[in-house]
Image (cartoon, rainbow, N blue to C red; front, side, top):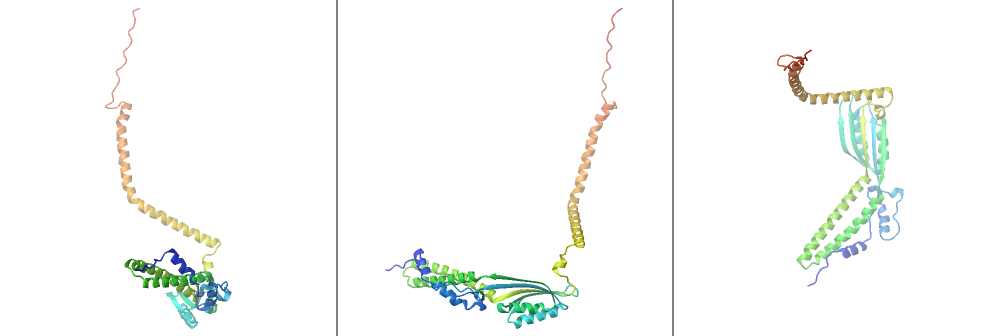
Length: 296
């Protein structure tokens, strides 16, 4: 009976060395980089990592003051859906003075800058922040690891099909299951990166016209210092009253016990004081005996 070799270190090494990484960076706007990465894995040179072929995650935040928060929110949703995106989150608060809406918007990466400009025109822009995260190297590394892991899974399946004993069958099934789980994890990471690079995220905050800027709300100067000091004083008084309220139930019984102890202590000192003053109950010493006089 022919024995099927188990998957050990040498078998894994052969699996890894026999596979060349292929694929490209994730994201719809980076699809052309796949051929360059495949050439790199096959020994055709370093991958093409020009700016227009890099995998970049764009994230933006914006705060805009508008006359009508609800109308501006509807206009923002229309702008994003018209650009091929969608609304990932929508939180609104109604009210005449404190109306507010916070929208999480997902837009295609190539429309990111244009959508930001359109959203800024909804009212008076108070704050804008854009952050980029270059994940090109991570994407290329994931492509290579996925290709290698797929080859290892295929090799394990071929050995499993040739198994002739129960021991080999059980061992190979466990090894193949472990390799498939590792492959699924790598592919999930790749899908996550593909989603983040293909669709950028914009967090839009819409406030009423009377809402001040974030910088004004945390301003400096005498009035700002006075307001901060008053808030600190109120907070300190609240803490002191809280502590006093917690201690008071224990303070009253403790005061009663201390008063009783002081009263008993005073009573214990009365006999000693009376003895010192010659009062009732005091013990008097006998008078001294006069010395005998000698005869003249």
